[in-house]
Image (tube, rainbow, N blue to C red; front, side):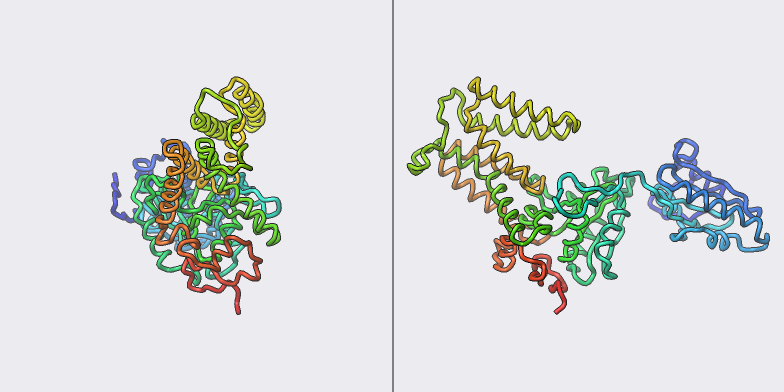
Length: 491
C-alpha cells in the first residue's frame, strides 16, 4: 500500500497499481459514488476514474465513444498516450504526474484518464455540480435591477463577475484551503487597480490557513483572515449580488470567492460600506440620496432611540415642556427597563422564528405575534403601549440596515447602552455613547480605519457618503483602498 502523506508520489506506470491505490486509499469499491470505466484500446488498458454526481454523464459517454473508436482507425505501433490526449474532446485537458494532484481532481468532480505504461494522468474538466440557478438574493432585493445573484458554484460566480467586467486585467487566482476539505477559494481583483500589498496580504493569509476543512465556507475564511475575536462589528462585507461585487472590484477592492457559498467577501471595508445598498444606485441621484438618508435614520434609531427614550423616562426633567408627553402615561408594576428588554427579546424571538418557520406559516405567525401577543400583553399590564411603540420603531430601524451582521452588532450596542442608562441615567448615556464611538474609531481592518471617511476626515469622500452623486461626477476611486490607478474615467 502506498502512503503518500505529505510526499508527492509520482503516478505509477501500471494501471493495476493505480487501481490498488484507489481501492486502499480512496475507497474504490466501497464508496458507491466513486467509479471507474476500464477500456481496452490498441491492446492496452485505459482506466477512467470519476465521482458520480459531480460529473456530466453525457460528456463522459461522448469521451468513451471517441476513445473506443481509436481501435478502428489506428495501428498498434502508434503512441497510444498521445492519441488519447489528442482525442479527448474537451476544452480543458491537463497532464498531472503526481497521485495527490490526480486524486484531488477526481474528488473535485473532474475525470482522470490513465494509460497503462505511462506515469501521467490526463485530467478532463467535465464538472457539473449540483445546485440552483442564479436568482435574486432574499436579503438584497431591489425594485429595479438585475435578478441574478451568486449561487453555491464558484465557477458560475466568477463567470457572472466576468460578464460584467470584460477586462483582460481582471484576475481570479485559484487557491485551495483545507487538508481534507480542499475547498476552492478564488481571489478576484483588477491587476492594475487593486493595491498589490493588500493582494499579497490576503493571498498569504489564505495560504497559511491550516485546517481540515471549511464547511462553513466564507465565514471560516474571514475568521482566519481578520482574527476578529469577540468584536461584534463586521470587518468585511458580504454580498450575493454580482453587480455589487463588480462595482467594488472597479473601485479597487479585493473579492474572495469560496466554493459552496452563495456570498462573496469584499475587503477592505469600513462602517459605511455596510449601510450602502444597490437600490440607491438604481434610482436617480436625488431619490438615491433620499433613500440613503432614510436608511441612515433607521440605523440611528436602531442604535439610540430606546436608550434615549429610557433616559427621558428616568429623567423627565430633561425634556422641554412641549415634549413633556414623551414617556409612559400609565403606571405599571414592572420597571420600564425590564419591559424594554422583554419586548426587544420578543422581536428577536420573532426574527429567529421567521427564519426557521416555513414560508406559508411565517405570515400567520407574524399576525399571531403582532395582534394577539402584543395586544394581550398590554391588556394584562405586562407592557405599556409606549414600550411596544418605541421597540417596534427601533426594530424596524434594525431591519432597514442592509447588512445583517451590522444590524445584530448595533442591537448588542443598544442593549449595552440601555443597561448603562438604567444604571447611571444621563452620565451612563453620555459615557456609553463616548465609549461606543471610541470603540468604532479604533477598529482597523487590514490597516484600514473602520470609520473612514469620518475619521480620519476626508471631505470629498464624506460628501459622497452623505449624498449619492451621479456616476459621471464620480471620477476618482476611494482612496481608502489605495488604488494604483485612482481615476475611474479616462481624462
